[in-house]
Length: 269
Image: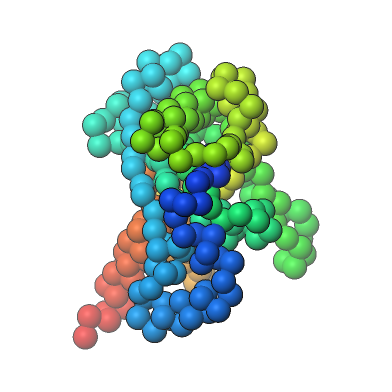
């Protein structure tokens, strides 16, 4: 139990090729090979733009916090999500979707916007399917299973569509390649069901907590409860899905475990 993730959905738009040089770069194997050498040498060059350049923003929504689905959440979660510093969703522009799905596009003059749900309420699970350790685990993320998530994703995708229609941006858009059939709540929700993706921020399946907690598997010293000589120090122990790029949280988790080990084994010297 305890599996959580930041869900995302894309909005893929073809763009006027005269406004960018993406097609020229990605259709030139020699240019890409030369650029990867430069990237590996000093981290600069075209790949620092085409593979890494993103515009990211975090947003709050009064519509979300005034919804019946939000008001049905436990009071502690409502209070947390109402704080000024807690975002409800994240929008990314410049997502290089064709690098993740090769062959999806033949024309690289596009823009991919993506929206990520923060404060996810749907909780999935990971289970054993047999006693054989070589058998893969069974993952059920239960994406969009909570009413709050469905409500929030409709509102935040509406904001994404609003951004795409701004005159300064829309003037160079040629067509929608991937998006909902219409801007109705029903079509937006259906699009999410058909296109939703993990953001690879999965966490919480070996939750850290107090000894005796029904849902805790690891104590504050990173020991797996009930086992000798085994600790876990990755995102699976984090009990709360943080509203950030979770790579930073992973670094902090590992560093915190290292501090615990240093103190326990007297490694300061």
